[in-house]
Each structure stands twice: as C-alpha cells, then as structure tokens.
Length: 352
Ligand code: NAD
Image 1 (tube, rainbow, N blue to C red):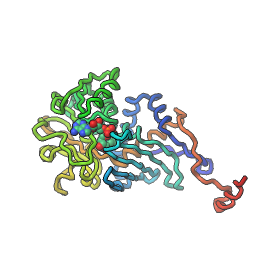
Image 2 (image 1 turned 135 degrees about the vertical axis):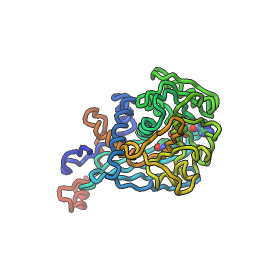
Image 3 (image 1 turned 45 degrees about the vertical axis):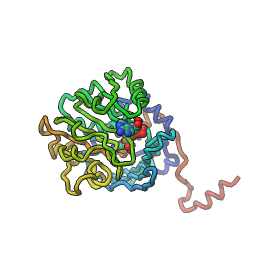
Image 4 (image 1 turned 60 degrees about the vertical axis):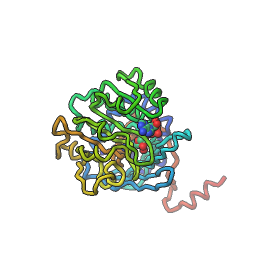
C-alpha cells in the first residue's frame, strides 16, 4: 500500500519532517483538505484492519502524565509514534500532547521517514473523529458542541465541517481565553462559531457533541441529564487509565464504538464498565460488517483513545506528500559503510 522509496543502497539519508516543515505542508495543502485526504488514508487502513499487527500502546505512567509508544505494521511498512499526555503542562506553558513518529521498511528495517507528530496528531485525531461521525452521527448533522477548546479544538471543528458537513460549532471551555482563541482561529472558516458559557449551553441543538478536555482524573464533563436521545458523542479527552470525561450512566444508554477494544478497555470511557460490556469496533462499521446508527433516537458514542493504525495512516500520508511538496530535510541517520561489516573502519576513516 505504501509507496516504498528507492533501493536501500541509495538511502543513506532519511527524510525528516520538522515542525516547521509540517506547518509548510499543512499551509501548502490547506488544513481542511489535508484532514480530508488523511481521513481517506485512515479509512482505507481501517478497511484492511486484519493486515495490521495490533497491540495496546506501551504506556509509562507518572504522577504528572504518561509517555507512550504506539507501534504497528502492515507487513510491508512498520510505524510507531512516541507521544506524551501531561494535563498539567498547559498551565506551565508546555503542550499537553507532543509527539514524533517513524515509518520503516519491513524488508530491511531501514527508516523511511522521521516526522514531528504534534501537529500531525491533531490532524489525524480530527480526521478519525470525522470518519467516525460520518458513519455514526445523525444524517444531516449540522451543529456540533466542542467542549474543551485547547490544542485539538480547531482541527476537530474543521474536520467535522469538511467531512460531515457541520455548519455551526458551539464552543465551551472552563477557561474563557481558550474559547476566545478558538473563536479567533475559526473566523473565516465558513463555520458559524458560537461562544458559550457552559457545557449545557454549548450542547443546545447540537447533534454532535465532542468532549476534548485534559485532566488526569475521572472527570464528569457530561452528566447523564445533559445528553438527549439521538446525538452522537465524540469523546476524545478520556484516553488514559483514571482519565475519563463522561458519567457512567451515559455509557449505559449509548451504543459504544471503539478503535481497538484491548486498548480502549484500559484507556477509554469504557474503563468504567464491566470488561465484557458490548462494544463495536469502528472498522466493522466502516467495512459494512456491522451497522452503525440504527435508529434516530439512539445515542452513538465514539470512545476515542487514538490507535496506532491512525498514526501509521497519517505518516503514510505525509510520506506520500514529500515528493510534491519538498518540505523535508535529509537526516544522516543510517550508518552507511562501503563494507557493511566495516563499521569500525568507517569510524576510523572519519578522523580528521
Ligand atoms: P489542551 O490542554 O490543549 O486543552 C484542553 C482544554 O480542556 C483546556 O483548554 C482546558 O481549559 C479545557 N478543560 C479542562 N477541563 C474542562 C472542563 N471540565 N470543561 C471544559 N473544558 C475543560 O489539550 P488538547 O491537546 O486539546 O487535548 C485534549 C485532550 O485530548 C487531552 O486529554 C489529550 O490527551 C486528548 N487527546 C486524545 C486524542 C485521541 O486520539 N483520542 C488525541 C489527542 C489528544
């Protein structure tokens, strides 16, 4: 599926996409178009779900947050993402989430791409949300509530506009400056943007409710009485053991859709439920194996935690943009002695 680069002998340098170059790629292609194109890669990889090696991500938890590795392979290409989640970072002037990732050839193990993934994660998370909403939200959903107006917020709104046809976004954050920032950034996007002073107000008339807050605890961003029938909930912020956003009673009324159950049962909203509580895997809906929304009063919940295949798809997409955009550096990352066994000699010869 991935277009592999030239033969390994010609690959002494690895393409590296820095944050600066990622921003150039986004601004060359356009954020909304890039999210929509990436969504096609994500959807295509969900369709070939059985081709991927899958494992829950490997997490190192601390009091302050978590550092995670997210590996996967389709047998031809291997990928992983390094990502952190530190809810207290924002107050200290740091990003809550930062990331970088690698793609490598499976046939010789050589890396073919090293990329920043902080911006890319926001794009891929938004694209995944919109793919899920496309399959699960009420038809003709035009209004979304966006609760939590931090780093992911505008990407989420753009994705829902571009892929689902959302026209109005109703914003709420406990920090009014975050909402003001999002209002500013979403001006001139064609979206009608409404700043709200409570989650309840933001949810008024919304067919899609996205929660994207950051707190390393069992938070209750939505209580059961706030959620009417027929809506689609896109719960993004609960993505760690002990870190959830929805009251358990909402889960008990919802049809729950997840990326990869072994990971979501540890990290998602469903960590609050019994281990055998029924959930549907998103790939089954995308392939038509299982129905998504089956009635207009059903509450559909995408319990998003972010899965390795989505990062793989995002990296694959970026890799495919390198030639046309030229926005990358060449990184001297692979030792390349003339005789592969003469690594020591190569070091010796490099002496000045
Ligand atoms: P961020 O720190 O930039 O923004 C979080 C926002 O939530 C802040 O503006 C904060 O004021 C607000 N907030 C906190 N508690 C709130 C509450 N009770 N009501 C309303 N707003 C509240 O973080 P971010 O990068 O936007 O990420 C948000 C969350 O999404 C994080 O928990 C992150 O781990 C998660 N995330 C999930 C995925 C995924 O694939 N599911 C991907 C990326 C990030």
